[in-house]
Length: 167
Image 1 (tube, helix red, strand yellow):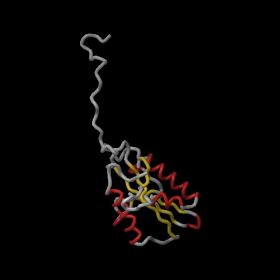
Image 2: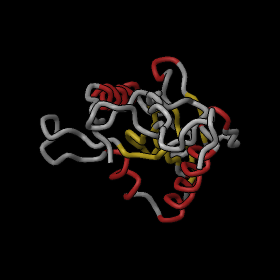
Image 3: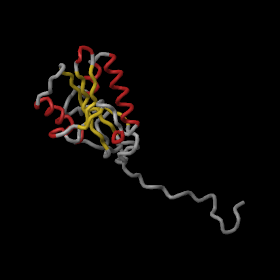
Image 4: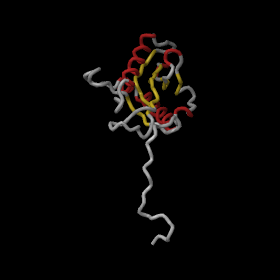
């Protein structure tokens, strides 16, 4: 029995408001999935590209993504496997892996701290979103038109929230 003057055990704590995720939180890895109105097949460009890569490259990319998400990303120092991009690609990150024949494999990612659930509440963890990927020959660069395609997919991803179009 509670002593006189002590709080009753029947009282419950007031619910705490849900705050949005922080950059210091562990991140969930998700793939951008195109919306039906933008692509009737509802493709997931980053996942489709990743699946086309050799198994050894896929395994290394998966390990890098998991390490970055757990670190979390702003604390990850990954020896060139996770790089912040610059210029027109500011706000983007790249998972960079070299594969057989010195071919370069790149996944283009964004960090999302504003994603919402179907109910409009912030998601529990921020997202490391894999938007798209590219492969290229040794010592070559991607064209500006290829980067523009990646940026367009990022804009499409951010255009919908409640929830984000991700799997």
